Image (cartoon, rainbow, N blue to C red; front, side, top):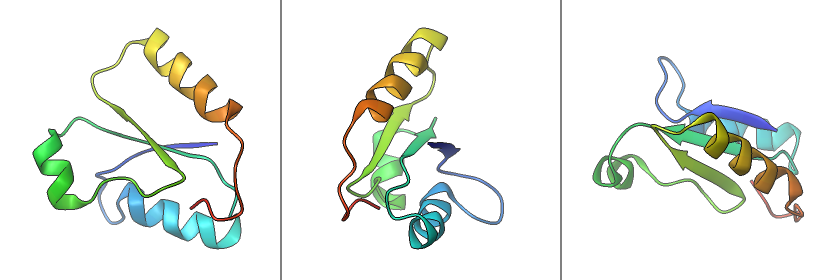
Length: 79
């Protein structure tokens, strides 16, 4: 599983996930961002097969989300 921020210098999390998906189509991706919903809508929401957790989050919330994503079945069309 990959945990990445949606906004990074040089390459955003969505682009990173897309590139990883070319090499590993079943790669589980968890995106995160501290931006508001409006900002995310303008920049693009995570695609199907990718998951999202908004900042700020507690260690317990992150742990639950990671467990949730790891436990999901990955279809061939994800990412």
